Image (cartoon, rainbow, N blue to C red):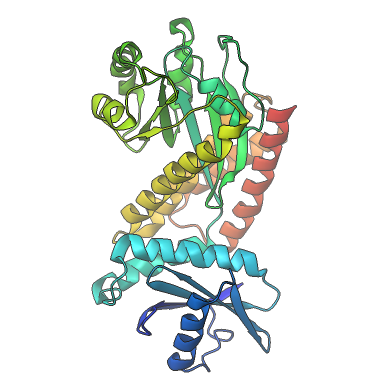
Length: 365
């Protein structure tokens, strides 16, 4: 387990510290020694720097002007700790940039809560849906992300296609749904919008398609929650008549990313876009938590994650299935309590992992 986190400016100034376990936080190093190691880490070609002293493992990570030092138990895996360090730096830089001022006194409690949630809370489960007019490449994007070669011939979708993806971001398990675009199937848009975290509106980047997209979005957006993040995907950027993604975004009225989805060769670029979208959503959610009482918001987020998993499971198994009974029991349990204890979070974490694995198996069967 992680026992302590320290954040430094690479010039040597300590910017923040959070202790999770006093007994194993290893408070022997002088800051000058840590600073020297940080400077050495920055200059070396090694992707990971760590020390083992007694039963404590210490990982050093430098990104930009900021460094994170993670003190953990000796058995913890270095690459996992490096990932935590990167995520810690990302959260710090998003709030405070690369300067040497550190965390203001009146914000230390809020930032401490953010890091506590990062270290102790279950992996997030995001529900992401793709909507848009027919023949804009939604299914091609879906297939590419699932490591399948997209069809060269357009075949209209008649139902929702879903899968659980674990390689988009280490921050979350992503439950991705590809919804058909034809008007007779758009009742699915409303159904899958329930409990949705991110809606991706896919266009083919042409003017006629954008006009149709604006019309369909105008009639559908009343079904979208205020907490749902809406993003545009300007697909088919390799078309001669494709509009620039910035132009597409200005027309649609929300941030839009350029992509193309002709073949599996496009997967890495698509993955980068999806990673940025999902991590932006997660970071924005953490920003909303800071400065407020975390208990209610954390439970709300847990509920949204569990309901997202439940929506997926209900497509494959009956309501009296033991897994759905377990899911519903946890939903009732969270709603009826004022606070979820640490032990309960551990128990719920295990349950969420089991439900997610089951959902993935069902989707692939």
